[in-house]
Amino acid sequence: MNRCGIFVAVILAIVTKSCLSDEHTHVYQDEEEVVLWMNTVGPYSNRQETYEYYSLPFCAGPKSSISHYHETLGEALQGTELEFSGLDIDFKTNIVSTKYCQITLSEEKLFALTYAVKNHYWYQMYLDDLPIWGIVGEVKDGEYYIWTHKKLEIGYNGQQIVDVNLTSDSKVKLLKDTVISFSYEVVWKPSEIKFTDRFDKYLDPSFFQHRIHWFSIFNSFMMVIFLVGLVSMILLRTLRKDYARYSKDDELDEMEKDLGDEYGWKQVHGDVFRAPAYPLLFSSMIGSGYQLIVVALCVILFAMLGDLYQERGSLLGTGIFVYAATSPVNGYFGGSLYSRLGGKQWIKQMVISAALLPLNVCVMVFFINFIAIYYHASRAIPFGTMVAIACICLFVILPLTLVGTVLGRNISGQANYPCRVNAVPRPIPEKKWFMEPAVITLMGGVLPFGSIFIEMYFIFTSFWAYKIYYVYGFMLLVFLIMVVVTVCVTIVCTYFLLNAEDYRWQWTSFCSAGSISMYIYMYAFYYYFFKTKMFGLFQTTFYFGYMALFSCALGVMTGTVGYVGTGIFVHTIYSTVKID
Image 1: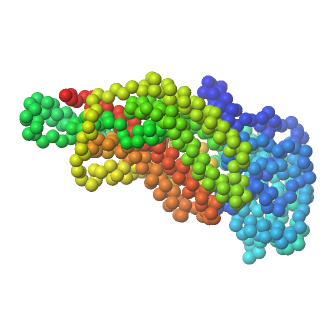
Image 2: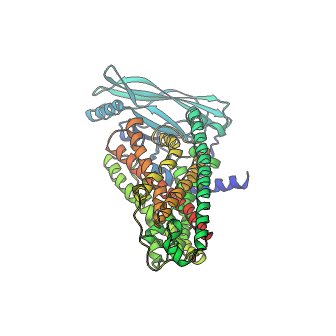
Image 3: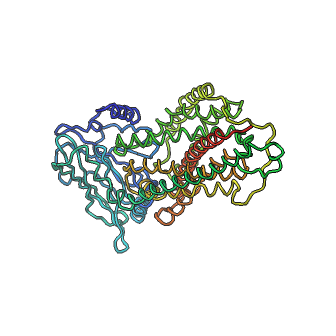
């Protein structure tokens, strides 16, 4: 194993806290116990509206000698509720059809099961970390039936489990006072599937590697080439003319300059590096954006190298770990920018920068969690998990952000502008309506959104439907394309703004690039109403709440990218012009 693989393995070990049991080593001896875990149950159309399996009047098997599985942080946040099925299953030991429990349908139990069948409830189980899905029942001729028999066909290769299939059988009509017996059957079969390939059956290459996916990548790539070439040609040609005109102006005496028609981006050289409005908030947003960019790249790379989709909650757990570990990035870039802008309240800036994203996430999660508790859903985050997250914020993120802020202020906190800043701000002349910062902001996110909206469909479908996203190479390529498109568009918008003698480019570049979040959230509305069959208060709140967080986070990332790229452009053009 190379160094990169070893590093990924260490990261995953820290995040998932894997314990040394057979279920995690995945190696069994003949007749050794194999645990079947019951996870959650919920309506098929609402993937996130899940409840404990035994919230429905199902009954467990007679075996109760095994302790409850200890969940990781990522599993707890995702609503995983593993409970022992009570079924006796041994490695390579076939079990004929065996009844393990029975229930009598009281009026309350009848109502619960009827409601579940009517709303197409599915349940999920795990065996050796392999997910298994089954349907509660079916509706036929206006009558409601429940499946009472579970047949598990388990494939093994050597001493490892490589495949599990569930067949539901024995349909029983739901009527009051009916006695329903539940049974199970286990059949072990040798398999040629390699252990490293056992998750391939859950992937959907025909969906994620469809020709339209490749075409969208190619289309976005061609857009990048065209846009970069167009921007380079226009700006180089225009700036060459500007340089020639300004060089000619420099040869004129003061009286001739006063009689001349002065206009263009050179005229705002004394204000272009003026600190933007609300510098504390601005620097905090930029610091958070830098951190999110690093987190996104790291998680995508870990997912590409470590197949994080194979471990429950590992992707979310890795994201939390990487976010906490990269807190110095936030402090460094946010603190250094605030110092260069002349800010004095650096402790306040550090606290706001560290708390900006976690606080917004916690507020939204608290609101959704309140509804989840009301619904008794498994998505309700336990109190202990909330305490753990709070401790991470207070004792990991905040101190590391402080370290980064101190380093940033001392290493790169000195302003190095090519032009002096005038003591009195220059009046901003009137301009055409389409050159106003508000209009530029709205239009700036159109092309970046156009470069990624096809990929958004695949990402949305993997999260809100029953798909496992695994093409992280596509995601990385689309992310890089989005960065290039965002920088190009923002530079053009900023050049037009400065040419109109409006020096308020910092917030404008950030907001125009970040306006992609608005278009993504609008697309989320379209996806909800036309691509899904979601229903109910909980699922709707969950969907739009987390989509708001996703859109805002992506907006902060792209806003930071736009500001950084534009900052380099602005610094470059004013450095190459002789200004008296």
